[in-house]
Length: 241
Image 1 (cartoon, rainbow, N blue to C red):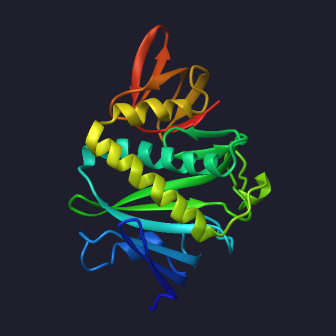
Image 2: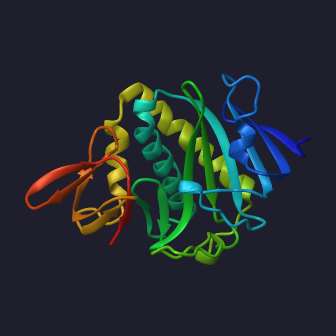
């Protein structure tokens, strides 16, 4: 399938397509995984979110994926870097907005979801990092506690590709900081955006539900939950209030 546009964004080659089944699936097909590549599409026919959930497609919203090489033990840190980069981008576009990161991987604006992240393994230590951002409209989200919103609904008007360029600049800067200075600098700024930090929350996964106080995240990006005067490390789950 031929791309409709190509450009250099940071150190990535970005290929824009009119329609793809999934940008994450397409990024898995690139021949040389060592070359930093971004795949974006105006439309996805089989976009997906966490746990295989279907991600409703809206023309004008941003759907993109890029490849990265990283040890599996550092993936939770990467999720924090991506979430922080997204939150920072939105905050820079409109400083008055209430922008938060809902652990582990959703970005919220005024308590509504505006962006999500999906990381999938390609092979070995190479990963497909897929991101969806509601630029012009919010999709219908069923069976979820939180509603969706879009930048346009929040008074921010810009082209999807402009957002992608802003985001990749922030991601590149934060990732460079992480490589040079470690995770502490990321953790500190991430906590400034943390949704419901120091509040009572519920963490749910497929098997359990736990309620407690959201204390912090640790040096791996895992959530620390205080329950019955004990602190517990939460590696995976969905955060609810």
